[in-house]
Image (cartoon, rainbow, N blue to C red; front, side, top):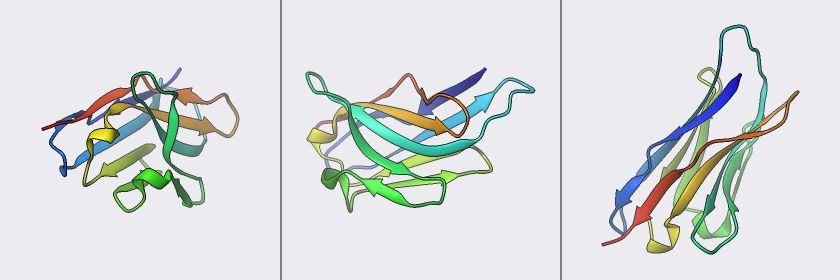
Length: 119
């Protein structure tokens, strides 16, 4: 089976930084081909929204609210996507989910990692 595992969340003060990681792995013999990798977030009482995504060709998309502060990147050799978050604000507080789209199978989402921005 293929699984998606996030890491890197935590508590940080306003203006601080965090880096999230999301690794895709599979049991021996299971092959997969990744298309788009992205990060979504959901704050209490709100719907889940796109934060950033990076396509197979390396092109990226960002939510307006994070442009200039967050950077998404991927390491295709390691099947990993990162989200560098700088100048964090209290409104960035949410559960962050990694979403992976595959070329030949259904998308998968990780279990989520909590990011809290508070003084």
